[in-house]
Image 1 (cartoon, rainbow, N blue to C red):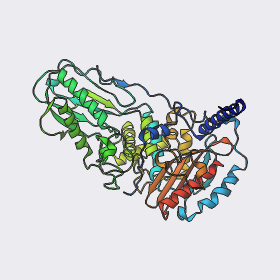
Image 2: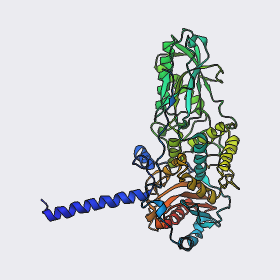
Image 3: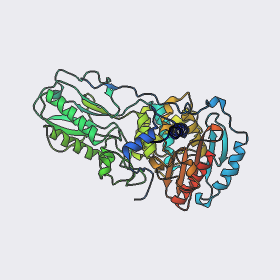
Image 4: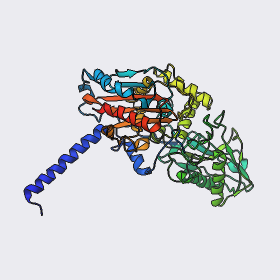
Length: 504
């Protein structure tokens, strides 16, 4: 047994350790309901993530999602009482300047560091030069989607019928009355008549997170609604007309992204990564919509319904009544997942939802126009920006480091709480998402757990943009873009070293 004095000393040390640990975690970044979102996703998924171009009654409307927690409130003392050291800009030039000249970052890398609270640029090098951003473009995708759609918006996948035998006396009720939950909710309508084959249509709404679990629930609700109407045999159709233009990303068939279609199940993944969680490259189906319809038909048969022939692609009739619906999680959660895991399929879905909201075609071209218009409307410095896609896989994308830091600063604006998921979704250095295995070297270890940032990787292109608590306790936004880098590993280490310098 410990002596009393030893016990008191041990207990006191433990309490002090807990206090110091809590303070360190608070400084590490924004929180969501008491736990950092990126950490919660990591704990749930426990898998390597990717997304950059790496080798190898009646349905009801979803209840609004809780507003994202503030990110500056966790910094103590209050931000208004803090002032950056007067020599901070000069200090950054002295420390970052030589590091930016590293040959590992190519011949002319760009950099921008701003004080989030004031918007002042503390360091800039070619900050207004448009460069290939790779996956850091997802920050622009996130801001545009949250601004245009709102954080509570959910994407629906529906099953409808225009067959009089399935309508019965109930015309489907109020079609605008929907209901949803965090994991995506499903419900079915009631009453219909008829025993002959009834045509039903699975209508894709652009939800890139539709998985086997929710598709099964949708089939269950559909089967229940049809049985209640006395229907026992159906002809399954599927509608992907929401999207237009090319389905295939300009990068071509690639393990990092499925063909971009309004209907998919498990992101068209052909391996076990579609079972429970997504992340990282995987073999993809060439026809995700057809595969999702086939899986849906199989699930209906498991529930006792007969199907008349294989599913066929056909646009749903305009006067169709809804039988069942399933909803994605809110856009706020989709943005966080997209950023943490660098999910290309979600990114392309979100920019098309932004285009639909703006009344533009849900295509690569329409999404580009919608996102750039949305950012311009927000008075962000979009000069020179060229957003050919939402994921950053297109090598013709162009963005400036100055725009990236402006986007991050806007996301931290106390007057724009709907944009906060842009910050809460950023991976944590050395801990989660695409930063899980980084910041381990001696010259970058100080950034581990302290930096939250979005990565970007294409052949010869490396980028990093995020936030860190810097000298004086101020939240800094930074962006570093490198082209013609000689190798991805050395470029990533150089970027980690650059951002880690901002912590001291």
